[in-house]
Image (tube, helix red, strand yellow):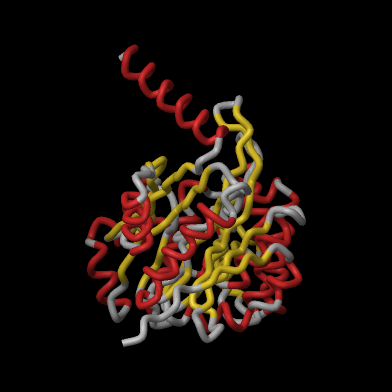
Length: 374
C-alpha cells in the first residue's frame, strides 16, 4: 500500500494573497465541525487588514500531494518584550489581540489534522526556525484535538509546552420552544423579569428592534457603539470603541458579515430612544453574544440590558438556533443565564533560540521566587 506524502507547507505573508483565499478557506471550514465565527475568513482577514503591519502575516497553508488545501495555521509574528526585559518574536493566532476572539485553532479536518500538525511542526522548527522565539496557541477549545496532537509532537522531541491561561464561555443550550424555556427559568426569575418589564413600561413606550440587513445594520451599529461607550468610557480603557482601529475593524466586519445574514444588532428603545443594545453574530446554529451596551443613567433599576438579553434569547429559540454563547467572562449575570460552560486553553512553546531560552529561565526563576516568598 502506497503511503501518502506528508503535507507541504507554504507561508502567505501578503494581504493580497490572503484576500484570494476566501473560497478555499470557507470550503475547508465546512470539514471542521463546531468551528466558530471567529475562524471565518472574513473575521480573520479583516482583523489582519486593520491590526497588522506588512511584515507580520505568517499564514501557513498545508497542501496534500494533489495540491489541495487541507490545513491552515492562521499565525502572525508579534515583536514584544516579555517580563519587560527580553525582546522576543512571538507567533500568535490571527485575531488573538484587541477584539476578544474566542475558539481559535488550527483549521483542518479530523482526518487530516495529525498529518497537518506534524508538517507544521517540522516547518516551524526546521525551515522557519530562525524567524520566531515563542509560539502561543491562544484560546484553543479544551476539546480540540490540536492540543493533544501538538503536545504529542513536543513529547516526542523532548520539548515541553506549558499552559499559560484558561478561559471559559458560559453557554445556554436552548430548548425547542419558548414556553419550555420560560418554564425552565423558575418562578422567581419569571417574576423578576415581569416586574422589571412593567417598571420599564410605566416609564414610556418600549420597543424591541433587530437589525440584520446591511442597510439596517449601519445605523443600528452607531447606536450600539454609543450605548457601549456610555457604559464604559468613564472606566479605565474607555471601552472597546475608544480604540479607533478597533472601531474601524468592527464597522467593516459588521458590514461584510451582515451581507451573509451573520450579524444581529438588537436594540431596546424607550419612546424611540435606544437605551440598551447588543452586538452579536449568528453562525451555524449559534448566537454569539459579543458586546452589550446600555446607558447607566436611564432606569438602571429596570435593568434594560438584562431585559434585552432575555428578549434575544427567546428570539434565538424562535429562529431555531441551538445555543446562545455568552462568550468570554464569567460575570455573575452570565452565570445566572447559562446552563453550561465551554473552556479554552492558551499554551506556549519555546523555540531553540537564545532569547527563548533566556525567557524560559527568567520565567522559571520568577516562579521559584513566588514559591519561596509564600
